[in-house]
Image (tube, rainbow, N blue to C red; front, top):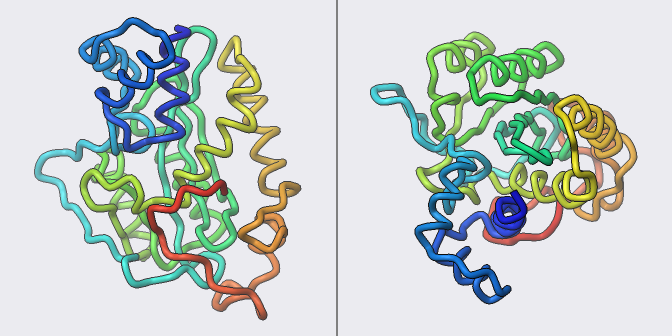
Length: 254
């Protein structure tokens, strides 16, 4: 489990690392391990290089894949662009899976769900809860099987949102959510060795409330996500606020 935890840390810091690079770093740290052994560990964890979080990048055969709409669009106001993604949360023995719906303009976490499996229902619960509060213009995800499922797509189509999907194997298309994962893991998950799903749920609930309501963000001129999300009108940018940057390869913290 200690080895898996270190792989988790490396992958969170560098989601573009594949098994070869992870093996090189581990060997430099004094771990005697082969690339095949690293591949086995990563498969058990459900991760692979360039795919954010758990291995959800395989879409369902025959299901539609929507184009990436955000290459030339900057999120300019709350509920303009939302992103949804899944990551894994380690316990002392085992893993949980966390799904979040994030408002890209304000970095406000609209909704989240935690589950012990990667089954579809927990993703649908998060999406329904988010849509019960507001509706974005554009909803972005990767091409994972959850996000190409008929139930999920029907939910978004009924809400009349424009569906956007990352390019295949491009974790950085969803850069704001990827930065959120780094923040949550380094500021909460890695500081608390959760013994049980209940303990993880309590810790993440406290942290995500803090993240939304109290944590100032440099990218938001040191305002909190809640302040920016609630202060700006839903149909236009906050007066005097600079547009948020385009998704890029930059890897600064949220």
